[in-house]
Image (cartoon, rainbow, N blue to C red; front, side):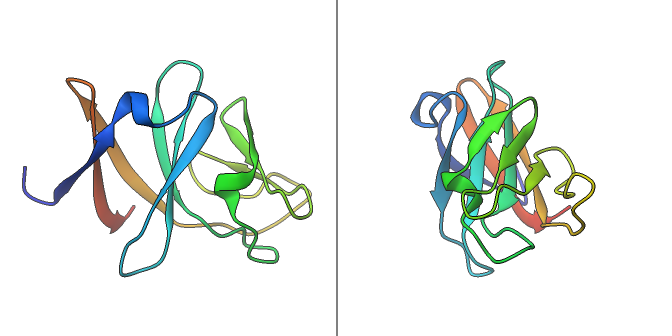
Amino acid sequence: MSGWREICLLQEIPRLGARVIKSPEGDIALFRNADDVVLALADRCPHKGGRLSQGIVFDGKVACPLHGWTISLHDGKAIAPDEGRVETFEVKVENGKVFLSLWPS
C-alpha cells in the first residue's frame, strides 16, 4: 500500500461531519457524506482561512463557518459566485478502514 496511510475507522468520522488530522502540510479534514463516501480537503477556506471541518456538510459540499462560502468536497473549488480552491487528497475505504494519500491530487 505504498503512498497510503491508515487514518481511522469509517465509523470514527461522523456522517455529514468531519474529522481533522494533522500533517506536515497543515490540517486535513476528512468528510463523510450520507452515503458513507469519504473525501478530504485542506482544512482552510480559500476566502479567510476558516476551518472547513467546522462547516455544514450537504449535497457534496461544505459551507465555511465564517462567511458561508460553499466548497465542493469533490474538487475543492468554491461554488460561484465565489472563487478559489483548496487542495484535495485521495481517500479510500477498505474493510471499514479509511486510508489517505498525503499528496494533494
